[in-house]
Image (tube, rainbow, N blue to C red; front, side, top):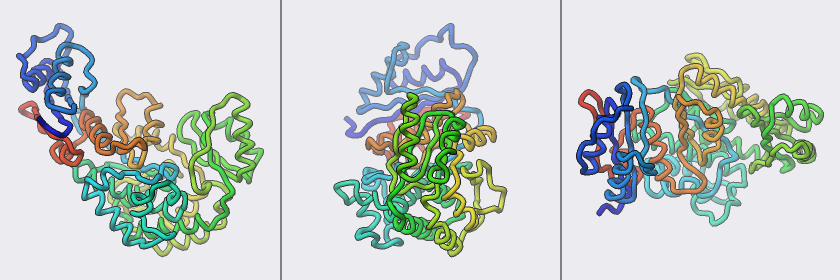
Length: 426
């Protein structure tokens, strides 16, 4: 009996062929065609379970038309979908993020270790010590550690996905996530990126701790109208989706805004962040940030890079300049508009690169049938299981995934792959 979770991955050119493949994998006779099968459509199936026997039981339930929690079926596009990597921001940085893959996935650990050694000791510890050696979350409450820690783990995730054959067609980052997004394009070397983000964190930590960021589940126009009465002490920091707006500002002003919306019955909650960005609280460090960016070598992105500040794709050969990074820290993030633009350019698959599923949750609010949203990690842990689920979702949608490498990296046993004669595993 296998001691690892098990996977079976099947592909066929029609529903009857897929059921026949599933029956063969489960050791059952091939079922008869169904009258409601409809036209032949390419389909993929993934079955996952703790043992081969559990996988077979789920396949039998699937064949009987019953609910099988371990079985997922998708209809991949004839051509691989355009895949966007979306890099989350600092509010998701936490101690222990990616701990399981740090221990079990050498490619990921190598990148994080390299970032840690490049940055050296900061605030009395290293990045690796802050992320994986602390028994409490306090080290990552320090921006000098939280910001480069997020960059390091995101760069590690990019390397890990590449080992499994998954690379982006386009990238975008939410606030701090744009630095790792630019690294993923090849325009920002790993050492330069970690040093720049480390300096950004050092500058941030020099600021006073007065300030608050909070998300309001209300229309942008309504939020902007209220915030205007508090400017310049508060600002709209991010428009993430219809009725998902983040405000940022000095504590008193931001607290009053929250109270006003809560009195209206609007859901609102503060974000866990070391310092508020995208408001005047960070004005004292803008000169230093621009100077640090001016010292950092940046090349031309080798794949499309989308700015969430400007909600536009950079033209070929264009790179963020030092003034861009100054504005990037101060001006609002237009994530919702950016996603609309990506969809308009043909992106139908989105993979979040970060410690949790915050951006994925925003994307799933769109409820677009033709879009696939997956997250690399969740704050609840079980890293390799979450990664396997994400890889499965992408593969079902038609994204190329090296199934053998993914299964090995996720600690799964790939029991069987079966594809139509004119197909391959992607």
